[in-house]
Each structure stands twice: as C-alpha cells, then as structure tokens.
Image 1 (cartoon, rainbow, N blue to C red):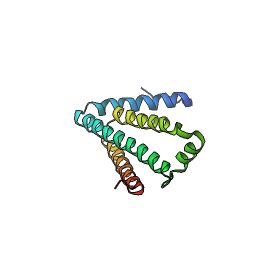
Image 2 (cartoon, rainbow, N blue to C red):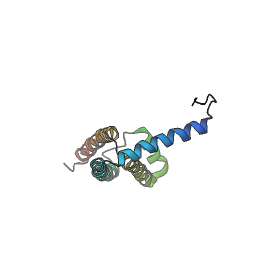
Image 3 (cartoon, rainbow, N blue to C red):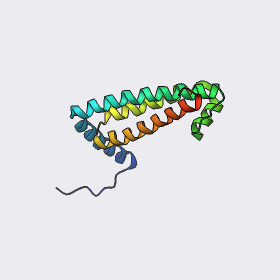
Image 4 (cartoon, rainbow, N blue to C red):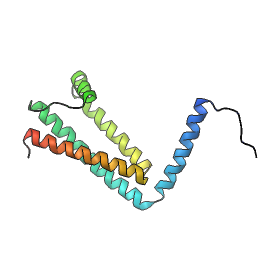
Length: 131
C-alpha cells in the first residue's frame, strides 16, 4: 500500500499527533509501578505547591519578601488574591498531565521541578523566619 501524498491540514496534524500521544500515554499507564510513582510524586508536588503558596503569602504579608517570578508578581499586583486559585489550577493541570502520562522521562523531569520548588519553599521559610 502506498502512503498518501496529500498534505495534511493543520487540524489533521494536531489530531494525529494527539492520537499518537494518547496511545503512548495509554501504554505508559499499563506500568503500575510508574503509575504509583507518578501518584506519589503528584502528592508531594501538591503538598510542596501548597507550602509555596502559604510561605509566599506569609512573606508578602510580613513585608519581608516579594514574588521573584515576574509573571506571578504581575498577577499578584493586578489581581490581588486571585493568584491563589490560578496557581492552584495550574498545579492541578500539571498533576493531571503527570498522572495521564506516567512515563519515565516525564517523571524524571517532574522530579527535578518538584526538587527545585522544594528548595524555593525552604528559601521562603528562611526568609520569613520559619527556620
């Protein structure tokens, strides 16, 4: 059978790409040890994320800290406390992506991200005097 030489439209390319990704995600979810690892990492990530929000808010209210991330700083200054549900929604989206595609590389990259966020929380704790 000869492959089609008709060029695909952009929507067709996106749909085909998503179908392939969905297939690989399904294969990754068959490995129960990766699923358990992803769930444990998601729990740790969300705990650290909540601590990040708490320590950031505490530091800002004590006027001993300010948000270092320019995008989050913009959101905080223009939307007041609305940054909290926004950040929480982004955390849940990242968690859903991890659980949907618990592949080794994804878990490794996510682990690095969680470690960095953990260091940020420790820094927040030192700044605010918790430690």
